[in-house]
Amino acid sequence: MSGRSRGRPTGGEAGETRARLITAAREQFAARGFAGTSLRSVAREAGVDPSLISHYFGGRHGLLVATLDLPIDAMERITGVLTEGPDGLGERLVRTFVSSWDPHRDTISGLLRSIFEPDGVQGPVFQFVRTVLVDGLTEVLDGDAVRADLVMAQVIGLGSARYVLEVDPLREAPIEDVVALYGPAIQAVVDAESPRS
Amino acid sequence: MSGRSRGRPTGGEAGETRARLITAAREQFAARGFAGTSLRSVAREAGVDPSLISHYFGGRHGLLVATLDLPIDAMERITGVLTEGPDGLGERLVRTFVSSWDPHRDTISGLLRSIFEPDGVQGPVFQFVRTVLVDGLTEVLDGDAVRADLVMAQVIGLGSARYVLEVDPLREAPIEDVVALYGPAIQAVVDAESPRS
Image (cartoon, rainbow over all chains, first blue to last red; front, side, top):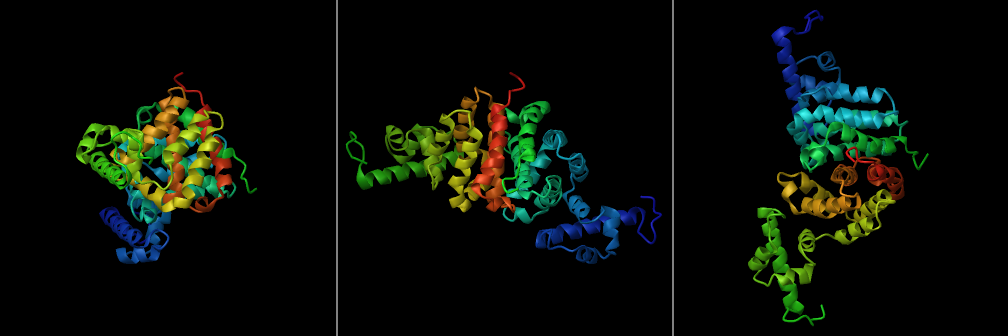
């Protein structure tokens, strides 16, 4: 934004570079999946220096999020929920999820549906869920990926029920009711002792 | 099966009548949804007496289940879980769900995907979930439909994660581990006091 970076495009040129990187990333994620896409090849297709990806997007995940064109800063919100650790994680996660997406029901519904399409698991939405939410949860849960998967299952289930399937009366239940009822359910998985530990 | 019913088709004729009813029901559920389909119109299209639907399928829900051509008797299993009441419901539900569908992963994956397709909410799979699982849960939970919806959300989330998204390591986690970790999470919703009560 300041244009003070060394040798980097500025102003309108920067906006265009950014847009080219997003377009190239979308195409390569779609064709090769997130894991199979290198920043170098995205930069090459966009005709820019690979270092610009870190500059504009902070890295791979930031680029992935940019391709989703989300109405909220999902990565920042998830990180905010996770950095406070396991205590109260269930309630924080439910409150943040529902209050973030209630104003954008059509968007989250489309994002969730995309996960269930053929090859949806390779798509950017689920790659974001897996690498940001699940990997972050796994770290908070001392490496227990089964519990992280089960927390993700609950979040996807809640989002599906409230925004995609729109079941009554859950679809219009007050946020604090959902937090009070579902927060402890997620917390039960967070607090569980792993059967293998 | 015994052929002793009065004036009803028997043997091969019975199988054909049953198949005609299922075909007619599939078409009408697809065109009008479960709620918009009358047994009378299904029977008319199949060219048989409406009483035969109760005879062969035990009623509307049985006919719905028959159109799904499930490899397990899902209605009987759900009823079995629910009739024992709220105590231990979480563990029973998780154990029954996972042990029922682990041998039929492709089937449950397809059924769950169908819910997320356009108009999937009107389709027979979700109508079955809503009218058998959710309505049954609502009864067990003293009429609290929000909690019933949230239990459904957890079941759909678990099924999606284990069978559709197939996240590692959850997809191959031993059934008893899943029961031990996820049963209490569902039980937390079952045991929660409704914020409105």
